[in-house]
Image (tube, rainbow, N blue to C red; front, side, top):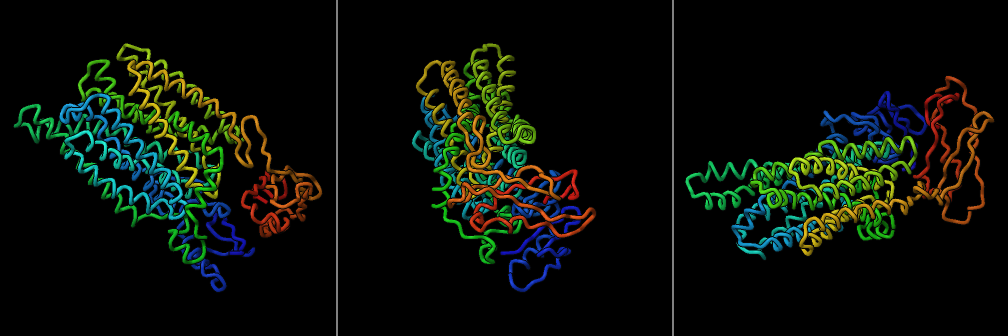
Length: 564
């Protein structure tokens, strides 16, 4: 709609066509969408940025208010349930191996099949998020994957376990919806922190699965519910029963989020399309736009070097401690869960570091901290693989986990900048890099007989992937060694004095040689005049690129602290 809308954060009021309007009193008439906006602005409990589609510029973790914080909590809770289902089998693989009669190599094959299912589903669901939003695909995944999870106890063969783990692996695609959801609700200044918090708390489901399934539910069912049976029979009955618990919980959460959350700050996508507020997006076109961007694939490789490592450790850590240190399943599962529990803070710490480095060094600060964390992660993998002392292994596992998850957070501090028009596709491609890395590492552990050498392969891959940071070149932001190539500078003058630089995207038609100056009319001190419409002064040729326009903040001029 061709309206100039501004949100006054302090008073939760709206500027419409340069008129100050209280919430709920926007004139209705020529555009039906105004009525929805009038009703919805009143419900915003957080300060928002209308130039970023009413995304929140602050957050309150203790709030469940719609739309922003409700979506945030639904995103990480549903992702937590999805990951819990996905990794529910991991701590019980030694018991399943005995009951079904599988070899160690066959167990590794099922691990690889599981992450392959995740990889495929992430590629598919990324573009679907661009078309339908995150809410519906997330609900569908939870409800559908709950079925094979509940049926896990019926497995009696290698082929049956492969089929189940492939479809359960679809739960790993919940990460794509989680990241798309938070990106749709929070401004780019916060997106690194909020994406990382949601993903970190969701990833915690993998660590909780180690403890709940391996150290709590399994011994509880074995010793209490089947205590009258012989130990071997009790163990067999226990692992075949307990998978119903995560399946029921995930199914319930999937039903709840579809009815109690929103796709976007202004409402659900289907309703906004009917009102003409959102253009119908082609999933095919979205995938094409995101996939031709080389940064998507570079970040996918780097995400494989951090999240792929986490997936490998979630599947292998418990078995590693059982084999190397002769521990029981309960004890090994408890130790392995430490890797996942670092998600409580480590991934969020990475996102926060990304935002802080961005505020200090500019966008290249995001790439710099990302590369450093990957290098430290690779070094820690070598240290973990070479230690033979149990306590030293636990310490290195913990430190190693912090760097892994912090690097995951910094990755998704960069992702929202890659291609804003295909955010779901980029999130899906980069997210698919995680399970793709896990597949590579899984084959390493499968075919390299010496486990230590398999860890060396993984550590070397991580360090090489870190070096790819030098090749990242984000449109309008550049990279570590590359300045933005598609922008030109124009001087802004206020009362005849030059004031900073305006970065304007280069138009798509031949205006490269044209220099543009935007002179602002004098604003008297203390004036409450409406915001100056600089966008209207630019050539019509720039209309498609005006979304990327960034204006400086004047702190010591007649404009006060307002943006102009």
